[in-house]
Length: 423
Image 1: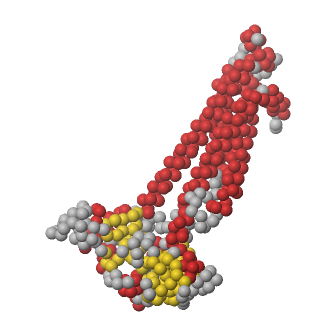
Image 2 (image 1 turned 180 degrees about the vertical axis):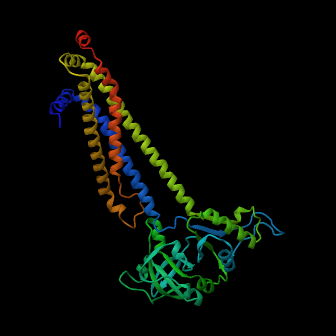
Image 3 (image 1 turned 135 degrees about the vertical axis):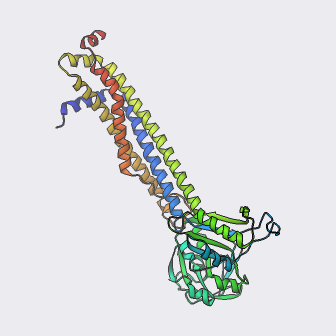
């Protein structure tokens, strides 16, 4: 049953001290508000970064040959190391733990582009030679046609898979280009597919500008012989990319007669390391948010405790009269805790609702940008787990009640005679 008399008295006390009530409530309100907004923004940034990495294999490793820096077995330093098809076969047979090994070639330097022609239309594109395995490294969907297959590799077919921008520039969005011819360095290729990468921002634009041909065809028509530019590798489930990379490097060093301590002879980039670094970064961000938020809430709790101590001191006469006419220490304690609960509960919930409203407004204003697949924005919808938010308010209430127990116990021990005499 609700004790209407008790809550009526609580309301009258809070109403009679409006300024003090407002200042105390504002501390709780802003503490909860700041915590909710910071958590929402932190989740929005993390979601945006994860979305920007969508379509990447988070444990992929890229490895390429560079130049030796040390002499070995009578060979001088400075030798350029060129990977070949034989290296691919050796890695596949001698290195355990490789799930996907995708040898690759590019027509120009890293991210360099070449002209692609269809009829009278010309556009620039990044030309690469790949195998069917590359689809595991870069997941993709197809608007038209298909990806290259093993028969394309075996027969060295002059076929190509093009990105959406190439499709749009050369054929137009409404035209199915499968079966049409494009020219790269005056060599004709038949379009067999139009793919869509699962990426966002600037990386999406680059992937939309890709033209992918069978690796064997690429090596033949562009006079690369048996050469491989670099490898994209994904390890077996449960294995770290770093451990498999060490085995790959060891095999390649033996084949190319490289000093085992010459770690600069082969370059590599590990997306798993970068992904784990980002994960650790967000762990630190969340820890920072909770530290700042909880410190703000703690300041509010201490404020409540101090205000209640001042209020009890000002109301000594009132408590003395109450006890002189029969009020028990328990009833005095209940009234003080009820005041604290009301103050903290109402201001905390208002802070929660205000924080959620602020996140909704931010989401509404930024939605045209964050929901655009072409926008290079590392931010997504700011979200908050209501369970965590409510748990924070409950913890705030409990902490406030515990902090109020000290002045409340003092009120319970007030001697009516001494209280009236002091007044």
